[in-house]
Every structure is written in structure tokens, then in C-alpha cells.
Image (cartoon, rainbow, N blue to C red; front, side, top):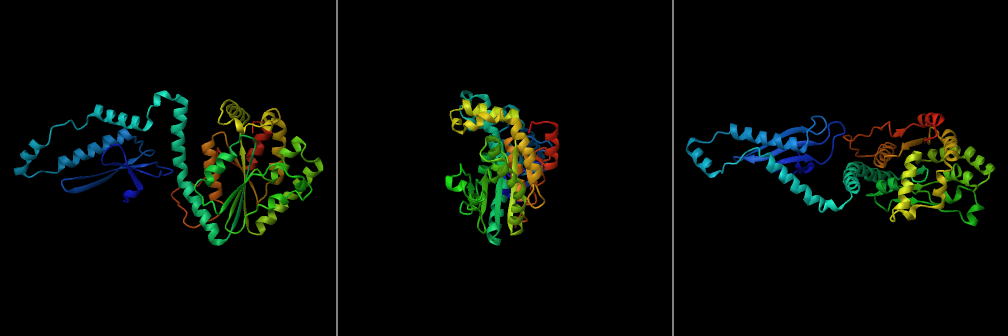
Length: 376
């Protein structure tokens, strides 16, 4: 048992695994030395055995008691040892709770001055970031593999305003080697670009061998945003819709790894995020004039989204729909989709790479949902 895979808890001799098994949860072990002998025992898992920290503390104390009870002292020294060891209750529950309370306060600081919702959100964010780290390690392996085999990758992030595209990109690239990836978020085209072939300004930013390019919005602006706001003609929109599938098939045929992610946020959640942007001084810069119209134009965007998904998904370049009302789960599923796109070296098969079908939705299921309701 490799102790580097575990971390010490607040209880001496009690360890918990750093990584979480997707099915069983984290593993508690007892490891201590007594009477010149080392004792190690697996106490169980958090999910499979429903073991909490308090339960694990109780189990290790019971284990220690059994070891001490079964270890017989020599008759000559027994009385001497008993005199030297002060009598103390073995299971002093009050003392354990006080120690745990002291430890938690040392972590939280002056938590009473914080808003409860802010505190809960902050603590949850710590757990969320921790659970993403094993997948972020895999993304580094993927990046190394792309460089090794000189492969190119494009990842497209599409979705309505406030759907979580930017946050997902930041989590995905958090620990990547910035020499081998680029994030591209293009603004309005210049007058020169307006007179060029539409895709030309995107091609300029395509990756070279061993590089990943992440498009925060892409050429699919012409499928949704531009026709709604009158930035292109109906003819230009139709030409794009007819030609883009063949264009992407050519890219894939020439060795490009193309991943298309659509972040699907509900109307209610989009409104909640807009309201937060308006009221939070730290987020007000995110709110734009276009955002103000997003809720009013919800149905128009839904119609264009439906048409885009129906006409531009293909076997070689399919759309992956990610329900993004829960930002953390959306980011996790986005990472899984990217990692499952290629068979890179050194994959950690103990991780759960299976899609969460409540978050990672097929195009067919999304289109069916949209025919029933326009919530997404």
C-alpha cells in the first residue's frame, strides 16, 4: 500500500485516499505502530460502506483497542507499564468533537462574518475543484500525446450567452502547457474580413502539429447569432449551412481532431446568471447589450439552435450537447468528452470516463426535447 496515495486526517493514524474511486468512494485506512509492530488495516469506503470521518475515527479506535487487548505484556513488566500509562477514557466522544471543531475553525477562520450562502458556495467550490484534478491530469497526458504524435485538435465551445463556455475553458486549460494550446475568441470582423471568404479569419487561427486551439464561439456564429441580429443575409446564412458539414469532414479527413461542444442552459438559469451579473460589481463587465436581448429573443435563438444541430451534426464531426445549469457537472462532462476523443498514452482507467446521461445529451435527445419545449 503506497502511503503517498493517502493523506492524514485529524485523527492520528487515520488516513484517507487522495483520489476517489468512481464506484466505492474514498478509502479509509488505519496505520499505526504499537509495541514495536506496525499495524495496517483497510477500514472501508465512503460510498460503499457509508463511512464518515466520525465513523472512521470510531473504527480505528476499536481496532487499536483490539490490538492492545490481544497483545499480552510480559508478566514482570505489565504492572510497571500500567503504572506509567495514565488512565484515560478510550472513547472520549466529547474530546473528539472538540478537536474536530477546533480543526474546522482553524480552516474556516472568522466564518461568522461571512454570508452563509457565500460560505457554502466557497466550500463546495473547493470540493468541485478537487474532483476535477484527476481529469485535469489526464488532459495534460492528452496534450503530451498530441505533441508526441504531432496531431492537431480543435475544440469548439458554443452556447447561448451565460451558458458557461468561458468557465469551462478556464478549467480545461488550468494546468495545460500554455506553449501548446491557444484560446481564440474573435470579435467583430473588420471591413477587410467582411470582404473575405467567411471562414478565412478562423482558418488563420487553426492549430499546428501538437497544438490545441479552443474556440470560444466559432464559425457557428453564422448559424445562430448573425442571422438573428441581421449581421448576415439570409443567403449567406443558407450557404454556410449547406457548406459547413463538407468543410468539417475535409478537416477530419486530413487528420484534424474536431470536437464540437454545445452548452445548453435553461431560460430560468440564464436569467439568474444575468441578474447576478447586473447586481455583482465584480461581474458587471460581463453584461452586454446583446445579453439584454437574449431573454426576449429566446424563441428565435431556439429555432436557430434547432436548425443548426439538426443540419450540422455529422458522423465525422458530431455535436456533443452539455446541459450546463450545473456548472461543475458541465465542466466535468466536457473534460470526459475531450479525453474520450482519442486513445492517448497512460490513461488512468480507474477514473470514471462514462458519460453522465443527465448532463451529456445526444443530439437526437436534445432535438426531441426541443420539439416538446423551448426550455433549452
